[in-house]
Image (cartoon, rainbow, N blue to C red):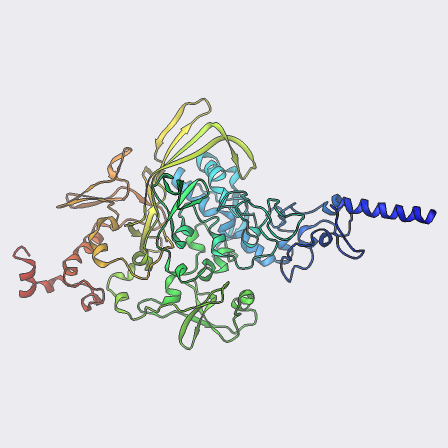
Length: 617
């Protein structure tokens, strides 16, 4: 009887312990984690146990004890914990991410300051801290929580939700984790787990799978880069248009819906995407995760250029042989289907650093698809007549090869202090709710101006903000106010790479004869002037879709290009562009030999050209 009583007691104790951990079936030497989460995918081969990442006690048989002191509870990779979790093994990678503009958001904050309130001598980032700039100089960041004015409010309540350090859950097309998991543990639209662990399946917020994603797909990049410049949409061939959710398919908005109640239509995709390339096949880890230095603008952290793979008109792609056993291409390509090997000739980026997937083989440049293993062969343009046109040295490649550029005109922002809204940095609600409307969107044609490199590139409104402020007592203190920039109230444009590249370039005649490409907007051209067609009630004499005017033969700029060193084309440049039309009537192909040198208009003074041009010449 005593023996049976002891057996019964042991059985009841076993059942009680099992019930404490949700009916888990564990063996004596098995960790509690795997006993309960039997179907859970392993993060990777190098992540063999649970507690180094998640914390907790994998020997405790009580659920509460087992889960005590966990990092998370659902995301140990968040910035709240990453020093003790991811960073305990990946110190080098974490240090890069912490100084990366993707995490600090220093460029976004700085540009909002400059274009809304004239800038600030202090430098702000999401969490503050210290870093080094590319010259090795010490930098101190202030926390954006301490940034006053509308620019601080706008970032904390409106712009910061795409920030790597902030989790966004349950948002179709835009859900993502925070910290390292943002890119390496992708969310689905509902931010729920959909793997084989019955304990967690259907619950959230969690990544869709517990398997680590070492090489993020394009669809993951699109979870953040579908707003502002919409570069992820343009790359895959989607665009927001002026359709106001008008039903287009089966009585519903369409053809596709994305986050924020937005519907998008199909356009021609970027040529690289059409041929099977992911974002990470061009962009290096040093751009995405940072290179250890802190930058205050995105274009400073970007290190790649079209010429890297395609060459320029005069120079082929540069390369460097792998000679060191700790070379970046060897280390980074370990997760690729085809790892790089010592002795390979790796193509160099615009900053002179080796790609980890672009190389020379038998005199030919190849790009390896990091995820797919596919080999792509970039077309080489070195020596081709179309790329040796005199005067085109100032053109960025994408000035001619962009098929479309997202342009959003008239951004009307309303800041209402009678309503509360979440501050995503502080994690609480406070007075002040932002909302926005827009006047018009277009994709083509797109204006050109000098960018921060002194080259001619596409530009896009950045931003044409008209601000209304409603105080807590309901009074309107600003009504469609245009913020001051460089000392005066003016709308703004910014250099932009749309990520919608085509193999065919914009036609020579189209670019040289259409004033919209030069920044005059849409209008009616008469002798010596252009009458704008797209006006705004707040600046009725200036085109909203341009930044130049032509009156009595004089070119004037009325809007700013918002990057240091950027500016609209000057009158002398505009006249040179239009003068080429004299030649394009007959010489309409870029490979024509007359374009190999600067045009000599004195050559028109011969019997043939005088007869063609008429007596007025």
